[in-house]
Length: 99
Image (cartoon, rainbow, N blue to C red; front, top):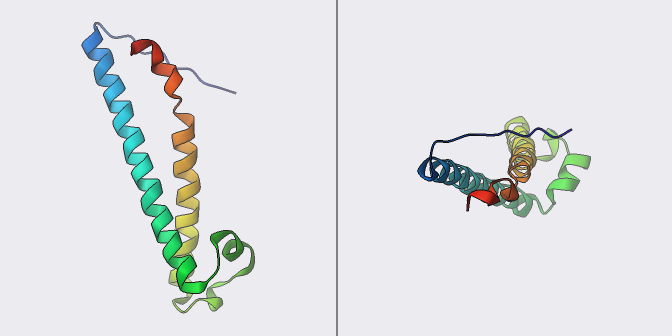
């Protein structure tokens, strides 16, 4: 199921403001994705295990930082999934007629 939102504005300036806001949103999401990937890479380097394998096979007892480090690694993995899904939902073609 898709949801379509229609925004009516009085003039081109209003449309451009909305486009700029959406572009800013995408930039922040991409920055969040890159930051999260760096954090995941840090865990992967420290333990010599990629995140997918970590999620499948490891427990808090396998990590030097114990429960806290486990929760952080899992949290970063879930955050990456969520950020990527949010960014994917924002279709650039949905605003193409404004440009």
